[in-house]
Image (cartoon, rainbow, N blue to C red):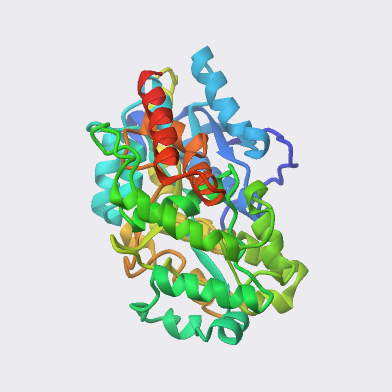
Length: 446
């Protein structure tokens, strides 16, 4: 049985999957069968994605004789974060709730350990990337199961034609569909030269320096490429390091090559820059490309998603995972775990990825070569390198490896982009570093 609720977007009743073999999972049947279960999923921006997740839940619920209710919760206006905070405070709510990035750690004391789910899933689907471990574990305790739905990499999406015309770079040759990258020369120095050429050509890179996630995520990857950590994994403040200084010098060269007003950009500006035909490159998951397919197909057919440039300390790309977590006050924890095992099976993951048009990313290493990414277009193969199938870059999140509760404050307060702007606008290096050090010291005390 599947009982459905309506959220802000009208929920379309899903039909059972026909002719599909039912998936056998470790927690199915026995003590884990029957009862009621409530789920709070992230409300997907791709229209059919919610229908697919509902169909997968219905498939499992009818087999296990579980009465399930689903709410799709918007991330607009921090809706899902507010829901997490409210349920944690009330100690009442959904059995399973989608939690973005930092939120499992923020609610760690109220979450059911998921080791009994994660250990067999990792054995089956392969290891998860380091960012999922960093955000998803507190000590030895898994705080949630990495969710395919909503997880994303924010890497470069380049215009094939404009990069060739202005910078002489063939991004398809550098990141060929179906083959490993040939990107040894795609360095931070090359990136600056390409940004300068595209600016002179009238199509600047669309990279923001605002306080929202797209700007912060991009800055985080570049800081890590230079080894720039504000706080290390042990909680020591490391602001006044060579890596941080190098990252600030890099941004001081990059900012004048970007469009005017990037200091006030939010997460919509880079999308608009791509879809309008203005930008030669942005940093984003395939959502902007998907909008271009609908609204500006002539732009979409020239887009190619690929890896970050490599810096002195490596090649890093922002990875923002969602997790499915179970409250420790849930009345049906075993049944919740059974459903999460079902949703993490390769066949279910493949359906979720296809329904999102390749936007959603599983965290498990064996699930990065699904056919959706090879076949999506135009142009065909444009998303092939999006899931990092060759482990060409280290997936990271800004402000790591600081302890997550400190890193969350650095991230939320956009300390990295604020540092870049302060230094670019004429503040001395030492004064900028001292300001950031003071901010981090304050987070240590909070």
